[in-house]
Length: 117
Image 1 (cartoon, rainbow, N blue to C red):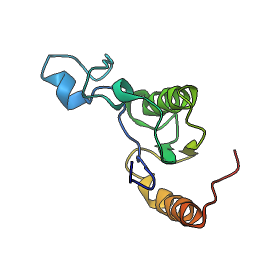
Image 2 (image 1 turned 60 degrees about the horizontal axis):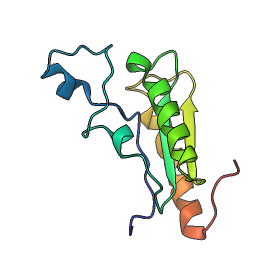
Image 3 (image 1 turned 120 degrees about the horizontal axis):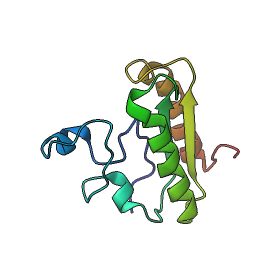
């Protein structure tokens, strides 16, 4: 509860494909187990900025995973969870433009301000 904020970059919120591959589950067969962030969705005390590449360029439906994670976080009472899509950027290229957005978000947290919804 002492974390000021979370900023997952293009996070895999279902069970990670490396874990699934241990069970011969391919990258296009989603699973949610106790290793998946989606399994642990709940109300959290800090703001979160979920960052994703372009939905047409991200890996294996990653944007849609993150959008579902964002929605479930909102439905669990987290008003300060935001989803940001970087149009034109894929999984590997989205971190560069994301850094400036995260810095601005952190500055807002430190000032007690959050982005407009």
